[in-house]
Image (cartoon, rainbow over all chains, first blue to last red):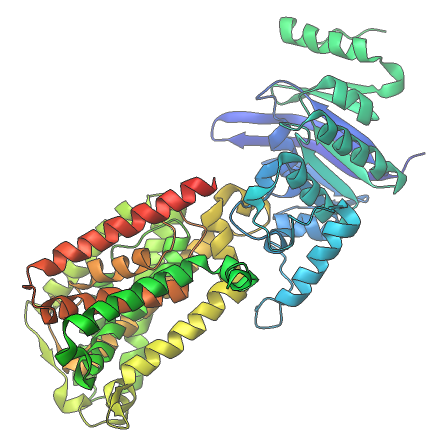
Length: 255
Length: 325
């Protein structure tokens, strides 16, 4: 029996009168990669922001490592071992790489002053060991602005590995990337499983999702409308389900 | 020479180096155009005396501008805090501590109001601070009923007067020493403290900063609060220098202060800035009036040239920024 890492129970989230999440129940096991799929506005982003502490749910329970938790801030979710890798939005363009890697959890002395030397040294380690940047053009003092989409994604991944998290949340990790860069990202996701880390990811491209994930959760207008293990569904069937959902607004449940 | 130009320091400090060169060229023009004034000490003493009043605020405002926000209310915060300082000094027979604490607390409260309006209510800072600009000035007028307050009897000759504005070795105005020390301190906070770091990230991209776990609202509120504090401090310096409160105190500060920040190279789009640049900006903007008059031009040119410098500076910086993207 797989060990449970994260469980969401009866999660509701409203923005004003708009019910974005309605009674969402999902579970992620250790070493499992789960893909969240659904149309724009299905609530995917909101759901992962509930997990990463950007938004608090209006009601419902969250369990992490089988203990009930209330994730109130990004800092808290990080501390628990949840790391988000948002598409390039995760980095600030005009700031140096070593500052970006440690933003929001700076290495400081007790007066709050940064240990620049240590941050640069650790950032250097992340660039070389975790990301494998060999280009001389990119250093820890480079501004993010000059990096390609794949390089930015690499920095975000490197950061999540460095902080040794249990659950990595990926928001559209392949959007805007070249074919080779996409390949790298998908390999990275597959590599997580070898380290018994879990991942939850959103992607519009079913082909990417299918290759990398173990399980698929389909969201529609704030509700979970379908859940499939990879061994139970082929890629074509999954695509069919999505088209069906798109056309009829519901998924036919087969026996 | 080539290796010097390509060195790490030069690459990362292009802006600071350019603005310093501009300041040097400007002072060379003064020097060559009006040697009878600029080869003698009194003009520099006058600069050191007058620049800190808006310089302190400009250094502090650099934090708010780096956030991509603006505060237009500080001239009135200077007004209301100076008034309170004057009232308490005269009514307590010169109790410096009470006056100082209450005046700076009021300054921080005014900053807090700005910060809350911008973050919790969601009013754009340019609009919110126009409101508070009028509000605090209006309150000054209501309380003072248009008349000034002399603090000469309770402040002149005291130790606090000495440490705020008297001359070190009979030559260097103390306010300039304070200005240098505060600039150094704020530069340190700006580049090497967590708070300064967060200021850059929030100004660069609010949404990203939030996702990285930075409390965007708190960072903004603290930025406005510290500007309120330093506005009060600048008001207190002015009070000691003049030994008098007048109801329009602070009103002339808006143009020079913000001009110094923008001329100094802090990005109007947020996310990038330099405290050192603001310091040089203060030297440039603070010397223009005397410089122009000493060069033999009439005082009517002062605003014109000031305006020209600001417009050209922000245009050049915006173009540099665009080329980078």
